[in-house]
Length: 386
Ligand SMILES: Nc1nc2c(ncn2[C@@H]2O[C@H](COP(=O)(O)OP(=O)(O)OP(=O)(O)O)[C@@H](O)[C@H]2O)c(=O)[nH]1
Ligand SMILES: [Mg+2]
Image (tube, rainbow, N blue to C red; front, side, top):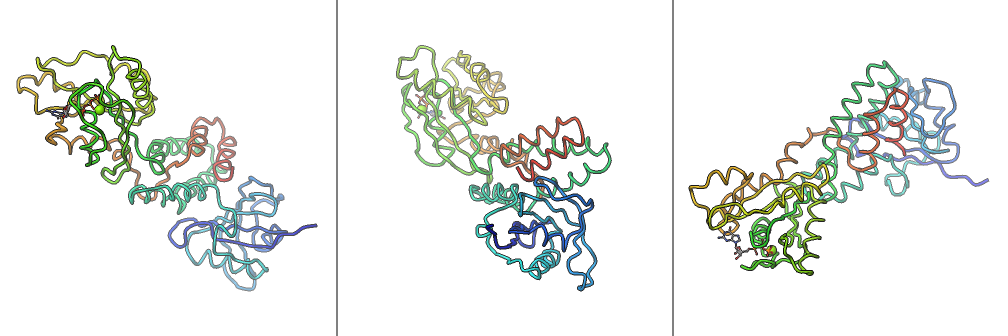
């Protein structure tokens, strides 16, 4: 029969998290565990369970037992969730060592992680700004894990706590967009009629000449994008072909792409310009994009070329969220803050749980809709381990 050496590894960041996770695996890991851990119920370990109990350690050391949660991940593979302080971690690791378990430093060497922490590590690797990295790091240090364990603890108790947990999960889901922009930039699409100054705005926002600007309709034929950082958030600004009804075949292709980009964006800036007679351009682009967008897409109206605007037409300007001049830079600061206002509004408190993968979002959504405490418990197990 083949056997695997016993090994343990700290799977969470050292020292700063409220909860620490220690992985333990190897042949007969369960029997080593049962020498140190007393489960609250006496049943055998089954993968996917959450087992509450006491860490007894070595009786000879005279230390008081400590509450821990043990999750059997697979046969001969366990996670031990304990208090995040160094003393609690050291105690458990040293007890395991005394039973012949080798403690490895690197998670990669150990080859396995708590799913929530592994996901956070992956997202952290893709975070590009200090602001987004700080939120990812909170998750890597166990913010979501801690909520999940606390919820599992309560779901075993009173049934009215289920409603409270579902409210908490709904609150966590409010930050879904923040979770998404930790690993990819917030997507802003510039759309509008030809020649209104979309490419000029892109260049202004990113601070260099990314797009060609020309005083002729139909200059931009394809989607061009540039990434920048606004108020600490990574933003991808996408310049698109001007949309008009009487377009030729090549322009039509660009327009289709523009509409597709608009439908995928987090924020669509619908750009207009004042006409010489101060009337609005009559093109129902707003409702066209509104009909294509996802429910999460926000649309904001921008009036560009404010330098050409006459004072008498405030009734026109009232219809816009932002009034700017890409040429002269007027209104740009307000526009930039407007780009990220949704993100700033959703910014979580330091250390709060944020769902950072579509898997977490999907499970939390099911959690908020679950009908019973047992369903909730199953979903928490899924969130921890699936
Ligand atoms: N006066 C004034 N002119 C501007 C402003 N912004 C852009 N323009 C001019 O408007 C013309 C068109 O600008 P573009 O940025 O190429 O417009 P566009 O919307 O990208 O055009 P298409 O790619 O053809 O759809 C150029 O001559 C720009 O210099 C502005 O704020 N004020
Ligand atoms: Mg253009």
